[in-house]
Length: 448
View (cartoon, rainbow, N blue to C red):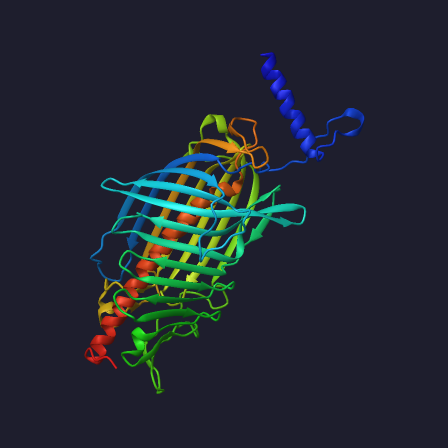
């Protein structure tokens, strides 16, 4: 009993000295430290932690006529094991030499199969006035490695993503921009490179598997966008253009190569406003938050703390969908104990031939919601060891001890964004396949 009291007194003394930069206060009094939401990060090489939870993906359809595709719901049990190291980011990714690599192995166990995803997230710190931002420089997500369905999504950020802040105070908030490069390699041999701009616009270049042809998708800040590339020009088409919304309509037209007037093929209802930024990303901090019952946080990690809620909203004027993500991290006295992730994609253009109008054009440009997809995931901390960057020692995370940084769970955000990117890939491939079939029909299969 005396040993436990002595240990507790020592811990309080360490906290007090840390609040005074290691110098005992004058007068022998220990001041009350300023309130903070999250502990000072102590994660270092050798730290390990494990999460578990669930994943649910739901697809629903609202086509004007009956759909051949019924609504679907798929669920999986999720386990996550993370190891922290100093492994450097491989080219073309880059991160400072001081960055830590959070290597996470996730297994999603569905009823008939399991999907294994490995994620590397390179993180570090950046001064932000009196606080320190916890930032993410790059990520690499590999799904089903060494199998016939393997795919890789590597993301580097032109401006490091803020994934946490210490000390964080109630009401604190920050924004991220979308600039960077996403490189995707799919199992079928298709490669795709997306150059993201800070304002949310992008240029996407896909090299089609088994051919030297490319297809590009480009968006602009005014809400317009287009398809282009050699996959189109070989059929005498310079671009498929989606003009910016005007008078409640969006004009979809074909621009031939060599000049000539464009041909209008559709005028769907405007389903977004051109004055709305194509991308926004905001995080807000709250205190005195009760952990949700759905998190099922183990009792040793407490019942309340703070929350970091990140909201990402975007729209794609070419592929024809909106995306809304909400990622809430619940932080206790020793780091993030639960993370709740949700994504809603709403489809306005059908490239899958699920409607009669899609057969009559190269897509169904309805301009009203045709389908929605939701992805929901919850991960809860089960156990962890924290290797202090200063002591290089390992100790179990226990009540009252400083532990994981709130950035420790940004691996989960990276995996979740890879899922969202995968769904975008499905849309993109469907659009490309439909475009090529449309052009072959339009030209009688004649390549120019």
